[in-house]
Length: 218
Image (cartoon, rainbow, N blue to C red):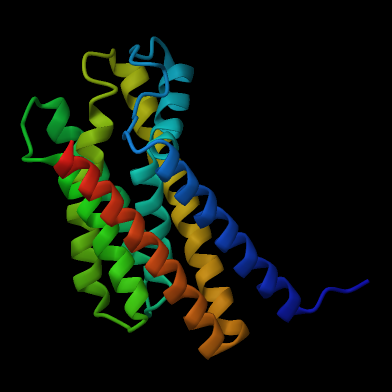
């Protein structure tokens, strides 16, 4: 039995809604932003470093929400794939800043605000200049990467490099999958697809507001 392209895209829409729903439930049940895949222990070898790097952007629900948001926002614009790529490069720079023992102001507030901002951009459903969004994504990446650096400060060079490879890989995969899904949803039906992405934007902006209020209120 052959599945029509329309049915496949409808499934993508349902999967997107399911993923966002799960993240929302996790946000409500565990508002604390946890970021330590190894329970706070430094990775001791390349394997632990890689797995810790892959786990950090997923265990940190605020990070995961932004990675998905970056991919979906990118789907709204031409050459939007630059958005997640520059975000990931920014996260590398942010980790480097942390490893150099330099401080960034209020990283958790900026991380939460980035989820809110990209959620609002997606909720508007309007094409925005790709370089402006890429710039915002790069700045957001610096703060996300700064938070990632906390889990690797003091580790040896081999697990540190593996950690960097891990979080770069997982962020690229998740954001590019989100970008691909977003593009496919729009191609299925321009108006309905855009409506689905805007709904996802409202969900993500709500999550960002929840993250930010949790940071502000403590």
